[in-house]
Picture 1 (cartoon, rainbow, N blue to C red):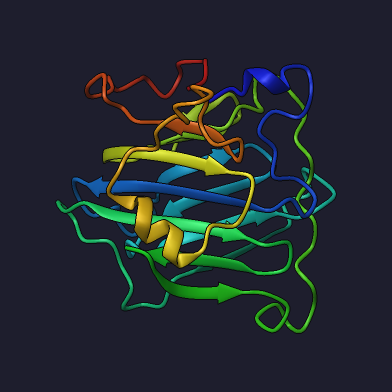
Picture 2: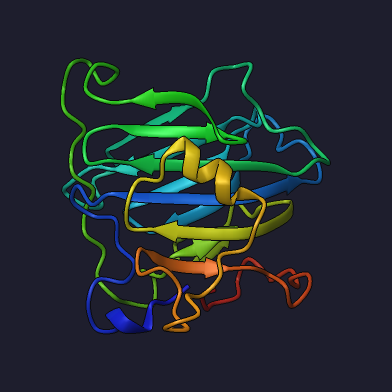
Length: 212
């Protein structure tokens, strides 16, 4: 997903302590397996929002400096999982201090200073525009290859540049985001949006290069 208005700058980056919301409808087709994960959103050297091996919504954020392999990762509690074969709405938000994960509009877990050994959550490295820096939906890019593909279906994937509340997540989960009739523009805080109304995506080879 490429934000044309920011071409030449950071490309849909959540680096530093930028606030954001990532949300999507997900329908996994099979369990991810003991060592696998299903990626919902990812950005190289910044973050990955995914379902872990136990089908728990999970978030991993890189820690500055970039490329050191340091990261913070957390997931919803063991009982808060995404069922196979059913549509579930999931979301991750960050308000500059705390990360939150939601399932069907209900807060599942919070990760902040208290959960991070009483240490404030570090900054995310700011990704610069390059072939590898695109925001990806449904996969991660590692060593020039796509991996951790989402096995199943994704719909209504959205990225906002502000933390959405539980009420807003619930209010808009079951509807498409419409343009303002007066301006024919989508809300300015909605920086990336895919409805997938064109039909089902075609699977790509792990060696294919490009971006969504």
